[in-house]
Each structure stands twice: as structure tokens, then as C-alpha cells.
Length: 114
Length: 157
Image (cartoon, rainbow over all chains, first blue to last red; front, side):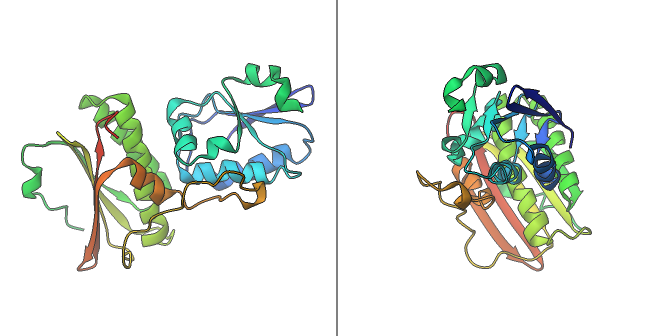
């Protein structure tokens, strides 16, 4: 599970390069997210632009990745494909995450920073 | 492992899309989903319908790997997909542990104001399936479990 990490000021942007977060990689994804966010104290944006499919295991792993941020912080998501957005919508998880149209929009969103 | 019944009278007049026997592993499920995408696309299905079939089939097959075969390799899954006028019919059979009683309802939709620490990390599979299909049927007998359902053509459900 390849995840790219970039710092934009105090915002961390994590971008999976694989097109699927599914049962095959869910545990790996969750562990990699823990590695990459353990020292992040600010906002974390997960850019899902390259991901065209998640199943409920992948969804669970993304929820777990938010919970392991700690401190009541919300994981932010950007660039959801229609099918990925549908999984979040149907499970109502879209009400829990901060969701941006794009990472650029997320970085420019000062409300999310508060 | 013998095949799915070939002479199901309900299958008359429908277009076969895919018949496959796959190992009961998550990697094999992923390959089967990618193959399904190609076959349904070749059969002329639209992208939204294919996406919905992929969501449903992923949950059904992952459930078999996890709950019928208990995450142990060695089991097999039979998969058949046909195109009917009502939608895409999915038929799945396995030789693993049967589901006792009624099919699970799955987790209820998230309540507003759920605390972060209380957010569920699983259990959405059956509720997603139920939200997206019609005519969900399951039966088990002679050591084999059969599950079938229909994903309506896009925008119907």
C-alpha cells in the first residue's frame, strides 16, 4: 500500500497511489496511516483522487485512521470519486469527515483549520 | 466443485455475463471484481450500474471469505452474473459455514452526533447490500450456500 505524504505548512496531505482501498489492503492502509500521522499535530487531508473503489473494509480502515489521530481530530478527505462518495453517503459517514472537492480547496479552507 | 445450476428456468431469456470459480481469498475477490467490471462493460452496462454491482459483489464475496471460510484459504466461490430486464442478477455459492437464521440486517445508519471514539469500523456490509439490491435470497443445503440478488439498472434504486 503506497501512501505519499507531503507537508503543506502545518497541514499534512496523504495520497494513496493505489486505486483501491479494499479488504486486501485495509489493515496495511490503517497501519501505514498510523505511521504517517503519528507525529502530525495539525490537520490531515487524505486525498482520494487516485482511489476509484472502497469497500466496507476500506471504509472501516479510513474511520480507524481518523480515530487513531487522537485528540478528537477529524480526518479530512478530498477528491472523492463518485463511487467512493456513494459509500460515504450511504453509510452517512459523509457527516463525520470533513470533505473537500479537492486538496487545493481543502488547503484554502480556513474554516477547517479552526 | 460442480457448477451452478445451468438450467434454472428463471435464466431463460437473460444474457449471461460471467461465470467464474474463484479461490476464497480477498486477493481473488479483487481480481473477480476487476474481471466483472470488464465483462459488464463489454455487455453494455452503464458505469453507475457497474459501480453499484461492484459495491454489492465486494461485500457479498468478502463476507464469504470472512464468515463462511473464516479467512482460511482453500475454499472456493462460484460466481455467476447475468443481465436481465430487471437488472444485473448476482448468484454466489460457497461450501463454507452457512448463515444461521435470517440474513443479517447490517449496521443501522449512523446517528447524528456520534462521538468519534464510538464510530463503527465495520458492520456496514449487509446494510450496503440491502440498500442496493432487490430480491435478496439465501438458502443453504447439502453443504452448499446460495445467495442471489438483483442490482437494478442505474437510477431505479
